[in-house]
Image (cartoon, rainbow, N blue to C red; front, side, top):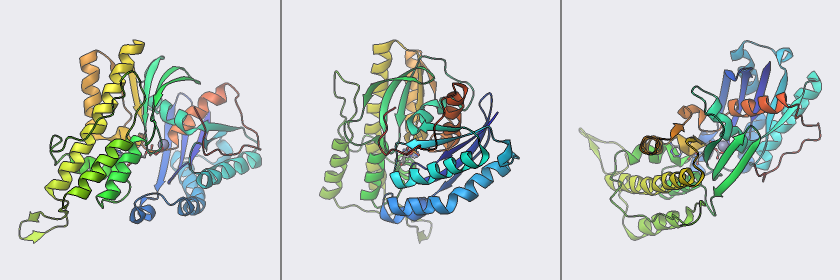
Length: 344
Ligand code: KG4
Ligand code: ZN
């Protein structure tokens, strides 16, 4: 069985082919960050237009890399939400047309289910039930994954998602979009104890909140003079963020990680579940990966984190989720409409 997965939910155009037994045979991602970086965030209209340009070449490349043709496909799994409506429309329209013309089943996949099931893209795979922390640009939520298709939410962010906070802090510091990778890199050169940014632990709740932290960084940056390019390399000055910017990045990142790890620990204590899976773009963060692994060792909990390339948006995770819906004959009709808001 060969499933083509498609994800156009945000700013990456992605197509992947997954073979039965959950084997990824191709996974192509065309990033749009070059378009959006100068705006410090995603411009939805520009994202939709680029998806229209890229969907055909990206699907073509996924089939070519897999060494198959359209006629070999058993089904198409497409992400139909949540996400940017114009972006989602491109993937959904393409998938519907492809399924109609080839007379093969169409499977609709929730983007969050894709992230959650990305734990199954590689070995070792978790066993149900497991705790799933999804930390992305649009979501920060903790679930109990009971079995395929059955997910119970324990908590979610009450305001900004963790990735959104990364992107906004990056914009504030003039570091461009996406913020996560650059802040991650600069944090490794800074002192995480330099600035005591607040941690919203929200006792008695497994919800999250990152807007206060974002405001604290804004206030700090407003109150001090920021030296951005102060380092000298040999005889020449290279445009490189200063030690001060690295300290802000490290202190901000420490506050995000403290909360994510502590909340996950509470969820382990509350549920008694001994497996934790991380997913979503922020799970590519080197500091978070390290701290979550350490927490796992201390608590005797198994921690599953995808390779960094499978943390951020990709279509392999959509194809994996689609595969499970396909087995249950959970097919979508040609009247499938994308939805910007779609709970898991
Ligand atoms: O899962 P994803 O690709 O898209 C959404 O579903 O939102 O996540 C994108 C988010 C962005 O906010 C980006 O800044 C963040 O993931 N991100 C990171 C890292 N790499 C990407 N955040 C922290 N550290 C990283 N290394
Ligand atoms: Zn995502």
